[in-house]
Amino acid sequence: MLPSLASLASDAAVPPLEPVAAYATRPELVDPTLSPDGQVLATSFRSDGEQVLIAHSLFAKEQPRLLRLGKTTLNWIHWPSDDYLVASLRKMEGIQGELYPFDRLFLMRRDLSEARQISPRSHSGISGDDVIYWAPDRSYLLLSMAKSVYDWPEVLRIDLPSGRSSRVVREREGISWWIASQTGEVDAGIGRRRSGNWRVIYRPAPGKPFTRLTSAREDRQTADTPAAGSDGDGDGEDLWIVNLDSETRNGHVLAYQGRDQLGLYEYDFAARAFGKAIFADDLFDIDNFSFRRGQLRWVSYVDDRWRIRWFDESVAGFYADLEKAVAGKIAFVTSESRDGAVRLVQTRSPTDPGTFYVFTEASGKMVPLGQVNRALDGKVLAPTTHVSYPARDGLTIPGYLTLPVGRPAAGLPLVVMPHGGPFVRDTWD
Image (cartoon, rainbow, N blue to C red):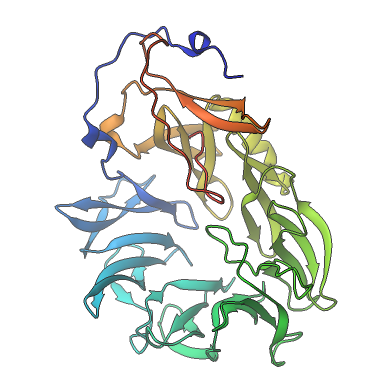
């Protein structure tokens, strides 16, 4: 049964209606990211329709450095070292009368005094920012990129900071995604045959030929993970490689394993055998995960709201304290210094479009940095409640109910927003 509407009604005064444009305001901070030493914050904003990158010193009294990027969109920022950063920028370009998003990597100095493209100009594929490996010593990265829009991607080594490129793995027909191990060996690939079947290829050791690990029909996919789906004839199991050790030939895969929910499992690539389940729930798919130097840090899932399960005990306590400090909101670290002494924290909830804070271990405090949507800063927004109700066949239907603030919970118009399923869903925040 739905909860009593009266019990969910707010006693707050009726707030003024906000213009629709306020909810469509561009984010104030886009992918804010800390330098490894925790001293500089890089982010971007738009000014007069133009993308502007900013590098801001958090603790020194220095003027922020600005770099105008033209009519591009920032996809992400990564700091390979304290001295320079790599940014992925998107620009719309025409092909045969249609516009397509072309992504390219640019390397920039810490003070933004210099910026240059490092995605090879000899390659004109659409995706030019698919980094599959960052070298621990920050000397190079591995980039999966096609020579043209009509070719399959190959793997290139891009030396940093020179930007010189060399080929590591040739293109292979039907392979769209290449996967590198934690030591930088490109040992697996995933793609689709002309028949439409998904397949996973793998090599048992660096330098050895690639062989088929699994192959199956495209009858089960997630919105973000093009996993190889089971075709019911025993030829392959659903799996998507997410971590691979070149020496032990062990790692982790996303798989269904006969279930309706996607889980994370250990996997022995040499024996082609599944190990123990790291996360496998009867109701919820795994939502995301994080590895650092081959070690699993956390997995996340969404029940009534976003949840995280920690495997790195060194930071689990920090997150437990963080949840208490922002009770009623979701909080997570979006970026941190290499020693964890400075962290960038974002909070969000139905009544908080998103707020960024800088946490310093020395002070133990979070200092506000900025809002995702300044137009809604300080405005009274309606809370959202997780509810469930039985369908006519007895199936329990989960949902989210939002009621207007300060208005009686009676005689209200009902707006129903079905999700786009079966792999897409709304979330509480």
